[in-house]
Length: 276
Ligand code: IMP
Ligand code: MG
Image (tube, rainbow, N blue to C red):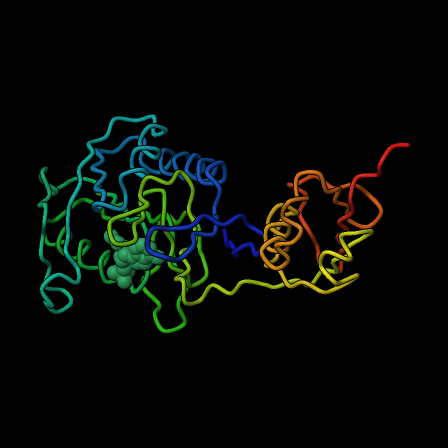
Protein backbone atom coordinates (compact mmCIF):
# COMPACT_ATOMS: atom_id res chain seq x y z
CA UNK A 1 0.00 0.00 0.00
CA UNK A 2 1.41 3.38 -1.02
CA UNK A 3 0.93 6.51 1.08
CA UNK A 4 1.48 10.17 0.33
CA UNK A 5 1.90 12.87 2.96
CA UNK A 6 -1.15 14.94 3.71
CA UNK A 7 -0.57 18.69 3.47
CA UNK A 8 -3.51 19.56 5.72
CA UNK A 9 -2.40 17.64 8.80
CA UNK A 10 -1.97 19.17 12.22
CA UNK A 11 1.55 20.08 13.32
CA UNK A 12 3.35 19.24 16.50
CA UNK A 13 6.41 21.26 17.56
CA UNK A 14 9.59 19.35 18.41
CA UNK A 15 12.35 20.03 20.87
CA UNK A 16 14.76 19.82 17.90
CA UNK A 17 13.28 23.01 16.46
CA UNK A 18 11.41 21.39 13.58
CA UNK A 19 7.90 20.06 13.30
CA UNK A 20 6.33 16.62 13.09
CA UNK A 21 3.50 16.36 10.60
CA UNK A 22 1.16 13.42 11.35
CA UNK A 23 1.47 10.96 8.49
CA UNK A 24 0.18 7.45 9.20
CA UNK A 25 -2.48 7.46 11.93
CA UNK A 26 -2.43 4.94 14.74
CA UNK A 27 -5.64 3.29 13.48
CA UNK A 28 -4.18 2.80 9.99
CA UNK A 29 -0.99 1.27 11.42
CA UNK A 30 -3.00 -1.17 13.53
CA UNK A 31 -5.22 -2.11 10.60
CA UNK A 32 -2.21 -2.85 8.40
CA UNK A 33 -0.33 -4.72 11.14
CA UNK A 34 -3.34 -7.03 11.60
CA UNK A 35 -3.35 -7.68 7.82
CA UNK A 36 0.36 -8.50 7.87
CA UNK A 37 -0.09 -10.80 10.89
CA UNK A 38 -2.84 -12.69 9.08
CA UNK A 39 -0.63 -13.13 6.02
CA UNK A 40 2.35 -14.29 8.10
CA UNK A 41 0.14 -16.66 10.12
CA UNK A 42 -1.08 -18.29 6.90
CA UNK A 43 2.45 -18.72 5.53
CA UNK A 44 4.16 -20.02 8.70
CA UNK A 45 1.46 -21.90 10.61
CA UNK A 46 3.02 -25.40 10.63
CA UNK A 47 6.67 -24.31 10.89
CA UNK A 48 9.31 -23.86 13.61
CA UNK A 49 9.55 -20.08 13.45
CA UNK A 50 12.13 -17.71 14.85
CA UNK A 51 11.12 -14.06 14.55
CA UNK A 52 14.08 -11.68 14.87
CA UNK A 53 13.52 -7.95 15.34
CA UNK A 54 16.26 -5.43 14.63
CA UNK A 55 16.66 -3.05 17.59
CA UNK A 56 15.63 -0.39 18.52
CA UNK A 57 13.18 0.75 15.87
CA UNK A 58 11.07 -2.43 15.77
CA UNK A 59 9.99 -2.49 19.42
CA UNK A 60 6.38 -1.34 18.87
CA UNK A 61 5.97 -3.06 15.50
CA UNK A 62 7.20 -6.41 16.93
CA UNK A 63 4.93 -6.11 19.98
CA UNK A 64 1.83 -5.45 17.85
CA UNK A 65 2.70 -7.94 15.12
CA UNK A 66 3.43 -10.86 17.43
CA UNK A 67 0.29 -10.49 19.54
CA UNK A 68 -1.81 -11.24 16.43
CA UNK A 69 0.23 -14.28 15.36
CA UNK A 70 -1.77 -17.32 16.37
CA UNK A 71 0.91 -20.03 16.17
CA UNK A 72 3.88 -21.03 18.35
CA UNK A 73 6.98 -19.01 17.65
CA UNK A 74 10.24 -17.92 19.24
CA UNK A 75 10.95 -14.21 19.47
CA UNK A 76 14.41 -12.66 19.48
CA UNK A 77 16.06 -9.30 18.91
CA UNK A 78 19.40 -8.35 17.40
CA UNK A 79 21.23 -5.06 17.57
CA UNK A 80 23.39 -3.76 14.77
CA UNK A 81 25.34 -0.59 14.47
CA UNK A 82 25.30 0.42 10.85
CA UNK A 83 27.09 3.77 10.83
CA UNK A 84 28.97 3.40 14.15
CA UNK A 85 32.69 3.02 13.42
CA UNK A 86 32.80 3.51 9.68
CA UNK A 87 33.12 -0.20 8.94
CA UNK A 88 32.42 -1.09 5.36
CA UNK A 89 29.10 -2.53 4.29
CA UNK A 90 28.85 -6.24 4.99
CA UNK A 91 31.19 -5.84 7.94
CA UNK A 92 28.57 -6.18 10.63
CA UNK A 93 29.02 -4.80 14.09
CA UNK A 94 26.56 -6.44 16.54
CA UNK A 95 25.40 -4.50 19.58
CA UNK A 96 23.29 -7.53 20.48
CA UNK A 97 23.98 -10.95 19.03
CA UNK A 98 21.19 -13.43 18.19
CA UNK A 99 20.14 -15.25 21.36
CA UNK A 100 18.83 -18.46 19.72
CA UNK A 101 20.35 -20.89 17.22
CA UNK A 102 19.23 -20.21 13.67
CA UNK A 103 20.18 -23.51 12.04
CA UNK A 104 17.24 -25.44 10.63
CA UNK A 105 14.63 -22.87 11.66
CA UNK A 106 12.32 -20.70 9.61
CA UNK A 107 13.64 -17.23 10.34
CA UNK A 108 11.63 -14.04 9.77
CA UNK A 109 13.63 -10.82 10.24
CA UNK A 110 11.65 -7.73 11.21
CA UNK A 111 12.94 -4.23 10.36
CA UNK A 112 11.35 -0.83 10.98
CA UNK A 113 12.28 0.95 7.76
CA UNK A 114 14.13 0.10 4.59
CA UNK A 115 16.09 2.91 3.03
CA UNK A 116 19.29 1.83 1.26
CA UNK A 117 18.60 -1.72 2.44
CA UNK A 118 22.07 -2.04 3.91
CA UNK A 119 21.00 -2.73 7.50
CA UNK A 120 18.57 -5.48 6.55
CA UNK A 121 20.96 -6.99 3.98
CA UNK A 122 23.71 -7.19 6.57
CA UNK A 123 21.51 -8.94 9.11
CA UNK A 124 20.12 -11.33 6.49
CA UNK A 125 23.63 -12.20 5.28
CA UNK A 126 24.85 -12.86 8.82
CA UNK A 127 21.87 -15.11 9.65
CA UNK A 128 22.05 -16.92 6.29
CA UNK A 129 25.59 -17.99 7.15
CA UNK A 130 24.14 -19.99 10.08
CA UNK A 131 22.03 -22.17 7.79
CA UNK A 132 18.37 -21.46 8.52
CA UNK A 133 15.69 -23.64 6.88
CA UNK A 134 14.31 -20.44 5.34
CA UNK A 135 14.97 -16.74 5.71
CA UNK A 136 12.50 -13.95 4.95
CA UNK A 137 12.06 -10.31 5.87
CA UNK A 138 9.20 -8.09 6.97
CA UNK A 139 9.51 -4.29 7.08
CA UNK A 140 6.99 -1.80 8.40
CA UNK A 141 8.02 0.94 5.96
CA UNK A 142 9.83 0.94 2.65
CA UNK A 143 11.11 4.39 1.78
CA UNK A 144 11.11 4.84 -2.00
CA UNK A 145 14.37 6.51 -2.97
CA UNK A 146 15.27 7.09 -6.60
CA UNK A 147 18.95 6.38 -5.91
CA UNK A 148 18.53 3.01 -4.15
CA UNK A 149 16.61 -0.12 -5.04
CA UNK A 150 17.11 -2.62 -2.25
CA UNK A 151 15.97 -6.20 -2.54
CA UNK A 152 12.20 -6.04 -1.88
CA UNK A 153 11.17 -7.40 1.52
CA UNK A 154 8.88 -10.44 1.63
CA UNK A 155 6.30 -8.52 3.67
CA UNK A 156 5.90 -4.73 3.68
CA UNK A 157 3.55 -2.54 5.71
CA UNK A 158 3.66 0.69 3.74
CA UNK A 159 5.67 2.03 0.82
CA UNK A 160 6.28 5.71 1.48
CA UNK A 161 7.81 8.67 -0.31
CA UNK A 162 11.27 9.87 0.66
CA UNK A 163 10.65 11.56 4.04
CA UNK A 164 12.35 11.31 7.40
CA UNK A 165 9.76 9.66 9.60
CA UNK A 166 9.48 9.30 13.37
CA UNK A 167 7.15 7.62 15.84
CA UNK A 168 5.85 4.08 16.36
CA UNK A 169 9.38 2.99 17.23
CA UNK A 170 11.27 5.21 14.78
CA UNK A 171 13.51 7.89 16.22
CA UNK A 172 15.21 11.16 15.55
CA UNK A 173 18.39 11.29 17.63
CA UNK A 174 16.84 8.80 20.07
CA UNK A 175 13.56 10.67 20.50
CA UNK A 176 9.90 10.27 19.41
CA UNK A 177 9.87 6.45 19.40
CA UNK A 178 6.91 6.61 21.78
CA UNK A 179 4.56 8.49 19.43
CA UNK A 180 1.68 6.11 18.69
CA UNK A 181 1.46 7.34 15.08
CA UNK A 182 4.06 7.88 12.35
CA UNK A 183 4.92 11.48 11.55
CA UNK A 184 7.15 13.23 9.05
CA UNK A 185 9.94 15.26 10.60
CA UNK A 186 10.58 18.59 8.93
CA UNK A 187 13.61 20.57 10.13
CA UNK A 188 13.00 24.18 11.20
CA UNK A 189 14.88 25.51 8.18
CA UNK A 190 12.36 23.96 5.77
CA UNK A 191 9.23 25.09 7.58
CA UNK A 192 7.56 27.97 5.79
CA UNK A 193 4.74 29.85 7.45
CA UNK A 194 1.98 30.93 5.10
CA UNK A 195 0.91 34.53 5.60
CA UNK A 196 -2.65 35.84 5.14
CA UNK A 197 -3.82 39.43 4.85
CA UNK A 198 -6.97 40.68 6.57
CA UNK A 199 -8.68 44.07 6.78
CA UNK A 200 -8.99 45.82 10.16
CA UNK A 201 -11.65 48.49 10.80
CA UNK A 202 -11.93 50.80 13.78
CA UNK A 203 -15.33 52.35 14.47
CA UNK A 204 -16.62 55.34 16.44
CA UNK A 205 -14.07 56.82 18.85
CA UNK A 206 -11.70 53.84 18.28
CA UNK A 207 -11.12 55.51 14.92
CA UNK A 208 -10.00 58.70 16.73
CA UNK A 209 -7.85 56.77 19.21
CA UNK A 210 -5.91 54.99 16.46
CA UNK A 211 -6.13 57.68 13.82
CA UNK A 212 -7.10 54.91 11.37
CA UNK A 213 -10.46 53.87 9.94
CA UNK A 214 -9.37 50.92 7.87
CA UNK A 215 -6.04 49.21 7.39
CA UNK A 216 -4.50 45.91 6.30
CA UNK A 217 -2.82 43.44 8.64
CA UNK A 218 -0.65 40.43 7.83
CA UNK A 219 -0.96 37.39 10.06
CA UNK A 220 0.28 33.80 10.04
CA UNK A 221 -2.31 31.48 8.51
CA UNK A 222 -4.42 29.73 11.15
CA UNK A 223 -4.27 32.85 13.36
CA UNK A 224 -7.21 33.40 15.75
CA UNK A 225 -9.02 36.60 16.71
CA UNK A 226 -7.19 36.58 20.08
CA UNK A 227 -3.74 36.66 18.42
CA UNK A 228 -4.84 39.28 15.92
CA UNK A 229 -6.17 41.44 18.78
CA UNK A 230 -2.89 41.11 20.63
CA UNK A 231 -1.00 42.27 17.57
CA UNK A 232 -3.40 45.19 17.08
CA UNK A 233 -3.11 46.29 20.72
CA UNK A 234 0.66 46.26 20.51
CA UNK A 235 0.50 48.41 17.38
CA UNK A 236 -2.14 50.83 18.78
CA UNK A 237 -1.59 50.87 22.57
CA UNK A 238 -4.15 53.69 22.87
CA UNK A 239 -6.81 50.95 22.50
CA UNK A 240 -5.48 48.99 25.44
CA UNK A 241 -7.73 50.59 28.13
CA UNK A 242 -10.77 49.62 26.01
CA UNK A 243 -9.69 46.13 25.09
CA UNK A 244 -11.95 44.36 27.63
CA UNK A 245 -15.10 46.19 26.61
CA UNK A 246 -14.50 46.41 22.86
CA UNK A 247 -16.80 44.45 20.58
CA UNK A 248 -15.16 42.44 17.83
CA UNK A 249 -16.76 41.28 14.62
CA UNK A 250 -15.61 39.37 11.58
CA UNK A 251 -17.61 40.61 8.61
CA UNK A 252 -21.12 41.32 9.92
CA UNK A 253 -21.00 38.88 12.83
CA UNK A 254 -19.69 39.14 16.37
CA UNK A 255 -16.64 36.92 16.75
CA UNK A 256 -15.25 35.01 19.72
CA UNK A 257 -11.57 35.01 20.62
CA UNK A 258 -10.95 31.54 19.20
CA UNK A 259 -12.43 32.23 15.77
CA UNK A 260 -9.83 31.37 13.11
CA UNK A 261 -9.28 34.14 10.56
CA UNK A 262 -9.07 33.60 6.82
CA UNK A 263 -7.42 35.71 4.15
CA UNK A 264 -9.65 38.66 3.17
CA UNK A 265 -11.64 38.67 6.43
CA UNK A 266 -12.66 42.09 7.75
CA UNK A 267 -12.07 42.42 11.49
CA UNK A 268 -13.98 45.27 13.18
CA UNK A 269 -13.44 46.81 16.60
CA UNK A 270 -16.10 49.07 18.06
CA UNK A 271 -17.03 50.40 21.47
CA UNK A 272 -20.09 48.98 23.20
CA UNK A 273 -23.27 50.82 22.32
CA UNK A 274 -24.18 53.19 25.14
CA UNK A 275 -27.71 52.53 26.33
CA UNK A 276 -30.17 55.43 26.50
P1 IMP B 1 19.19 1.44 5.50
O1 IMP B 1 20.25 0.58 6.14
O2 IMP B 1 19.75 2.51 4.63
O3 IMP B 1 18.12 0.64 4.82
O4 IMP B 1 18.52 2.28 6.66
C1 IMP B 1 17.66 1.69 7.57
C2 IMP B 1 17.94 2.15 8.98
O5 IMP B 1 18.15 3.56 9.05
C3 IMP B 1 16.72 1.84 9.81
O6 IMP B 1 16.96 0.70 10.59
C4 IMP B 1 16.55 3.05 10.67
O7 IMP B 1 17.16 2.82 11.91
C5 IMP B 1 17.28 4.16 9.97
N1 IMP B 1 16.36 5.02 9.23
C6 IMP B 1 16.28 5.18 7.89
N2 IMP B 1 15.34 6.07 7.55
C7 IMP B 1 14.79 6.49 8.71
C8 IMP B 1 13.74 7.43 9.01
O8 IMP B 1 13.09 8.04 8.14
N3 IMP B 1 13.46 7.61 10.33
C9 IMP B 1 14.11 6.96 11.32
N4 IMP B 1 15.10 6.07 11.08
C10 IMP B 1 15.44 5.85 9.78
MG1 MG C 1 17.33 0.73 12.60
